[in-house]
Image (cartoon, rainbow, N blue to C red):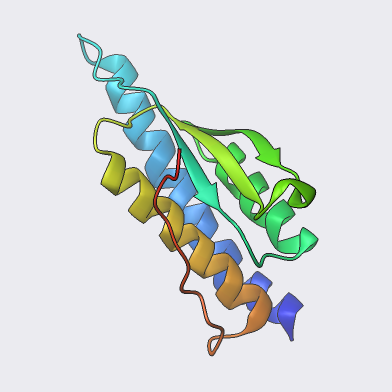
Length: 124
């Protein structure tokens, strides 16, 4: 069932996100003046399985304009990813976008009734 949710729900959504992000990045590169405001944010993943961490961080990294810089080990406390966003002038929007992707991953791996609520703010 998880594979079906990934193939029919998450994959098309991710392809759409990749397309929109690529177009946004291309339009920005082709217009004069830089609107890049890179920002590094902390994305908490306290109760994610290894597969969910892999899926989420891979999805973030292949999305144009974002990159996972590292993941804190679970042994050092709640697991978190450190994400660089190229268009990070609005930190709340970056967190909201990452929270939306996290919720999509959890919905695809745990089902639509999964509890996807968790802190999305930076605790640095």
